[in-house]
Amino acid sequence: MGFIKSIRRLLGTQPSEPLPSSRQREEKSDEILIFVVDESYDRIDEYVNWDDYADEEAATEAASKMFLSRVKSEFDVDFEEANIGPGADLPAFVTVIASNVAPLIPWLMAVFFTGKPIIDNIEAWRTILSKIRPFFRRTVVLNRNGAAVLAMDAVFENMGGIPKKVVLHGYKPDYSYDDAELVAPMEIEDPMPTLNLSMIKHVFHIEADGVSFVVAVDGTKVIAKRF
Image (cartoon, rainbow, N blue to C red; front, side, top):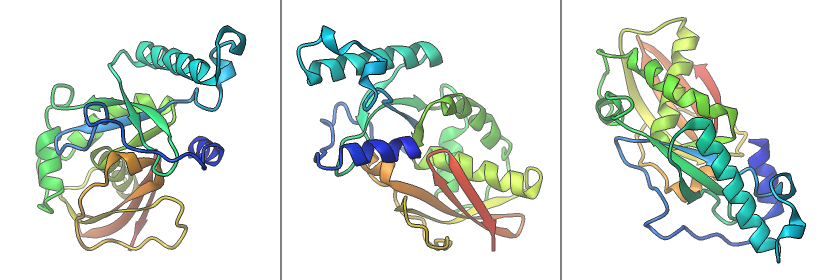
Protein backbone atom coordinates (compact mmCIF):
# COMPACT_ATOMS: atom_id res chain seq x y z
CA MET A 1 0.00 0.00 0.00
CA GLY A 2 3.03 2.33 -0.13
CA PHE A 3 2.00 3.81 -3.48
CA ILE A 4 -1.43 4.71 -2.12
CA LYS A 5 0.10 6.31 0.96
CA SER A 6 2.40 8.46 -1.16
CA ILE A 7 -0.51 9.75 -3.26
CA ARG A 8 -2.58 10.54 -0.19
CA ARG A 9 0.28 12.55 1.32
CA LEU A 10 0.65 14.44 -1.95
CA LEU A 11 -3.05 15.28 -2.17
CA GLY A 12 -3.90 15.55 1.50
CA THR A 13 -5.27 19.07 1.22
CA GLN A 14 -7.70 18.35 -1.61
CA PRO A 15 -11.22 17.32 -0.56
CA SER A 16 -12.79 14.45 -2.43
CA GLU A 17 -16.36 13.65 -3.28
CA PRO A 18 -17.94 10.54 -4.78
CA LEU A 19 -18.21 10.54 -8.52
CA PRO A 20 -21.75 10.90 -9.88
CA SER A 21 -23.70 7.71 -9.18
CA SER A 22 -23.61 6.78 -12.84
CA ARG A 23 -19.80 6.61 -12.68
CA GLN A 24 -18.93 5.39 -9.19
CA ARG A 25 -19.38 1.63 -9.01
CA GLU A 26 -20.76 0.51 -5.65
CA GLU A 27 -20.76 -2.86 -3.94
CA LYS A 28 -23.20 -5.50 -5.14
CA SER A 29 -23.67 -8.82 -3.41
CA ASP A 30 -22.89 -10.91 -6.48
CA GLU A 31 -19.83 -9.05 -7.82
CA ILE A 32 -16.15 -8.77 -7.08
CA LEU A 33 -14.83 -5.27 -7.75
CA ILE A 34 -11.15 -4.81 -8.57
CA PHE A 35 -9.97 -1.22 -8.31
CA VAL A 36 -6.68 -0.59 -10.10
CA VAL A 37 -5.16 2.61 -8.72
CA ASP A 38 -4.34 5.20 -11.39
CA GLU A 39 -0.55 5.07 -11.15
CA SER A 40 -0.16 8.10 -13.42
CA TYR A 41 -1.62 10.42 -10.79
CA ASP A 42 1.69 11.37 -9.15
CA ARG A 43 3.94 10.28 -12.04
CA ILE A 44 2.52 12.29 -14.90
CA ASP A 45 5.85 12.81 -16.64
CA GLU A 46 6.28 9.04 -17.00
CA TYR A 47 3.24 8.98 -19.26
CA VAL A 48 3.18 12.30 -21.16
CA ASN A 49 5.40 15.25 -22.07
CA TRP A 50 4.38 18.27 -20.00
CA ASP A 51 5.33 20.64 -22.84
CA ASP A 52 2.58 19.18 -25.03
CA TYR A 53 -0.20 20.45 -22.74
CA ALA A 54 -1.53 23.86 -21.79
CA ASP A 55 -1.76 23.24 -18.06
CA GLU A 56 -1.50 20.63 -15.31
CA GLU A 57 -5.13 19.60 -15.59
CA ALA A 58 -4.77 18.76 -19.29
CA ALA A 59 -1.54 16.86 -18.68
CA THR A 60 -3.11 14.94 -15.78
CA GLU A 61 -6.10 13.93 -17.89
CA ALA A 62 -3.90 12.82 -20.77
CA ALA A 63 -1.65 10.77 -18.48
CA SER A 64 -4.67 9.11 -16.93
CA LYS A 65 -6.01 8.18 -20.35
CA MET A 66 -2.63 6.73 -21.26
CA PHE A 67 -2.58 4.61 -18.08
CA LEU A 68 -6.14 3.43 -18.72
CA SER A 69 -5.20 2.41 -22.25
CA ARG A 70 -2.30 0.38 -20.88
CA VAL A 71 -4.30 -1.53 -18.30
CA LYS A 72 -7.11 -2.22 -20.77
CA SER A 73 -4.57 -3.74 -23.13
CA GLU A 74 -2.78 -5.56 -20.31
CA PHE A 75 -5.87 -7.28 -18.90
CA ASP A 76 -8.24 -7.23 -21.90
CA VAL A 77 -11.24 -6.13 -19.81
CA ASP A 78 -13.36 -3.02 -19.54
CA PHE A 79 -12.79 -0.48 -16.77
CA GLU A 80 -14.85 2.35 -15.31
CA GLU A 81 -13.59 5.49 -13.58
CA ALA A 82 -13.73 5.51 -9.79
CA ASN A 83 -12.53 7.46 -6.77
CA ILE A 84 -11.43 5.48 -3.70
CA GLY A 85 -9.95 8.32 -1.64
CA PRO A 86 -12.10 9.88 1.11
CA GLY A 87 -10.68 13.24 2.15
CA ALA A 88 -8.24 13.32 -0.79
CA ASP A 89 -8.93 12.09 -4.30
CA LEU A 90 -7.42 8.75 -5.23
CA PRO A 91 -8.41 8.01 -8.84
CA ALA A 92 -8.74 4.40 -9.89
CA PHE A 93 -10.26 2.25 -12.60
CA VAL A 94 -12.61 -0.54 -11.60
CA THR A 95 -13.44 -3.79 -13.34
CA VAL A 96 -15.97 -6.44 -12.34
CA ILE A 97 -15.69 -10.19 -11.85
CA ALA A 98 -19.20 -11.64 -11.87
CA SER A 99 -21.07 -14.86 -12.59
CA ASN A 100 -20.28 -14.67 -16.30
CA VAL A 101 -16.62 -15.21 -15.35
CA ALA A 102 -17.03 -17.35 -12.21
CA PRO A 103 -20.57 -18.81 -12.01
CA LEU A 104 -20.48 -19.66 -8.29
CA ILE A 105 -19.77 -16.10 -7.07
CA PRO A 106 -23.42 -15.19 -6.29
CA TRP A 107 -24.05 -18.43 -4.37
CA LEU A 108 -20.78 -18.39 -2.45
CA MET A 109 -21.09 -14.76 -1.37
CA ALA A 110 -24.76 -15.11 -0.41
CA VAL A 111 -24.08 -18.11 1.83
CA PHE A 112 -20.78 -16.80 3.22
CA PHE A 113 -22.01 -13.36 4.27
CA THR A 114 -25.19 -14.69 5.89
CA GLY A 115 -23.01 -16.76 8.22
CA LYS A 116 -24.20 -20.14 6.98
CA PRO A 117 -21.74 -23.05 6.78
CA ILE A 118 -20.27 -23.78 3.37
CA ILE A 119 -19.68 -27.49 2.76
CA ASP A 120 -20.01 -27.83 -1.01
CA ASN A 121 -17.86 -26.22 -3.70
CA ILE A 122 -15.30 -24.88 -1.23
CA GLU A 123 -12.58 -25.30 -3.84
CA ALA A 124 -14.39 -22.68 -5.94
CA TRP A 125 -12.79 -19.97 -3.78
CA ARG A 126 -9.44 -20.78 -5.35
CA THR A 127 -10.96 -20.85 -8.83
CA ILE A 128 -12.21 -17.31 -8.24
CA LEU A 129 -8.80 -16.28 -6.89
CA SER A 130 -7.23 -17.38 -10.17
CA LYS A 131 -9.44 -14.80 -11.92
CA ILE A 132 -8.34 -12.02 -9.54
CA ARG A 133 -4.64 -12.74 -9.10
CA PRO A 134 -3.47 -11.50 -12.55
CA PHE A 135 -4.47 -7.96 -11.56
CA PHE A 136 -2.03 -8.00 -8.67
CA ARG A 137 0.73 -6.88 -11.03
CA ARG A 138 -0.75 -3.43 -10.43
CA THR A 139 -1.67 -1.56 -7.24
CA VAL A 140 -5.07 -3.03 -6.43
CA VAL A 141 -7.83 -2.48 -3.87
CA LEU A 142 -10.72 -4.94 -3.51
CA ASN A 143 -14.29 -4.69 -2.34
CA ARG A 144 -15.59 -6.87 0.51
CA ASN A 145 -16.32 -9.84 -1.78
CA GLY A 146 -12.87 -9.73 -3.34
CA ALA A 147 -11.23 -9.46 0.06
CA ALA A 148 -13.20 -12.53 1.18
CA VAL A 149 -11.55 -14.56 -1.57
CA LEU A 150 -8.09 -13.57 -0.34
CA ALA A 151 -9.09 -14.24 3.28
CA MET A 152 -10.33 -17.73 2.43
CA ASP A 153 -7.16 -18.54 0.50
CA ALA A 154 -5.07 -17.44 3.50
CA VAL A 155 -7.06 -19.85 5.69
CA PHE A 156 -6.48 -22.66 3.20
CA GLU A 157 -2.75 -21.92 3.16
CA ASN A 158 -2.60 -21.88 6.95
CA MET A 159 -4.36 -25.24 7.16
CA GLY A 160 -2.30 -26.80 4.41
CA GLY A 161 -5.28 -27.56 2.18
CA ILE A 162 -8.97 -27.05 1.57
CA PRO A 163 -11.14 -27.71 4.66
CA LYS A 164 -14.39 -29.65 4.65
CA LYS A 165 -16.47 -26.87 6.18
CA VAL A 166 -16.10 -23.10 6.57
CA VAL A 167 -18.31 -20.49 8.17
CA LEU A 168 -18.03 -16.73 8.58
CA HIS A 169 -18.75 -15.56 12.14
CA GLY A 170 -17.88 -11.91 11.68
CA TYR A 171 -16.75 -9.19 9.30
CA LYS A 172 -15.93 -5.51 9.77
CA PRO A 173 -14.19 -2.80 7.77
CA ASP A 174 -11.42 -1.35 9.94
CA TYR A 175 -9.08 1.63 9.61
CA SER A 176 -6.24 0.63 7.31
CA TYR A 177 -3.42 2.19 9.32
CA ASP A 178 -4.52 0.94 12.73
CA ASP A 179 -1.65 -1.23 13.96
CA ALA A 180 -3.49 -2.48 17.04
CA GLU A 181 -3.69 -6.23 17.53
CA LEU A 182 -6.32 -7.84 15.34
CA VAL A 183 -9.58 -8.61 17.12
CA ALA A 184 -12.00 -11.07 15.55
CA PRO A 185 -15.35 -9.41 14.81
CA MET A 186 -18.41 -11.21 16.15
CA GLU A 187 -20.99 -9.70 13.79
CA ILE A 188 -21.18 -9.50 10.01
CA GLU A 189 -21.25 -5.82 9.08
CA ASP A 190 -22.26 -4.26 5.78
CA PRO A 191 -19.61 -3.19 3.27
CA MET A 192 -18.33 0.39 3.23
CA PRO A 193 -19.03 2.75 0.30
CA THR A 194 -16.40 2.21 -2.35
CA LEU A 195 -15.16 5.79 -1.93
CA ASN A 196 -13.61 4.67 1.38
CA LEU A 197 -11.78 1.58 0.13
CA SER A 198 -8.26 3.02 0.10
CA MET A 199 -8.57 3.79 3.82
CA ILE A 200 -9.83 0.45 5.15
CA LYS A 201 -8.75 -3.11 5.72
CA HIS A 202 -11.27 -5.95 5.67
CA VAL A 203 -11.27 -8.04 8.85
CA PHE A 204 -12.85 -11.51 8.88
CA HIS A 205 -13.60 -14.05 11.61
CA ILE A 206 -13.62 -17.42 9.84
CA GLU A 207 -13.98 -20.92 11.25
CA ALA A 208 -12.63 -23.79 9.16
CA ASP A 209 -13.04 -27.38 10.39
CA GLY A 210 -13.38 -26.14 13.93
CA VAL A 211 -10.31 -23.85 13.80
CA SER A 212 -10.94 -20.11 14.25
CA PHE A 213 -9.04 -17.46 12.32
CA VAL A 214 -8.93 -13.68 12.25
CA VAL A 215 -7.85 -12.47 8.81
CA ALA A 216 -7.08 -8.91 7.70
CA VAL A 217 -6.99 -7.99 4.01
CA ASP A 218 -5.44 -4.61 3.16
CA GLY A 219 -5.21 -4.19 -0.59
CA THR A 220 -3.50 -7.43 -1.57
CA LYS A 221 -1.66 -7.82 1.76
CA VAL A 222 -3.17 -10.55 3.94
CA ILE A 223 -2.52 -11.48 7.57
CA ALA A 224 -4.18 -14.61 9.02
CA LYS A 225 -3.91 -15.73 12.65
CA ARG A 226 -5.39 -18.64 14.55
CA PHE A 227 -6.96 -17.91 17.90
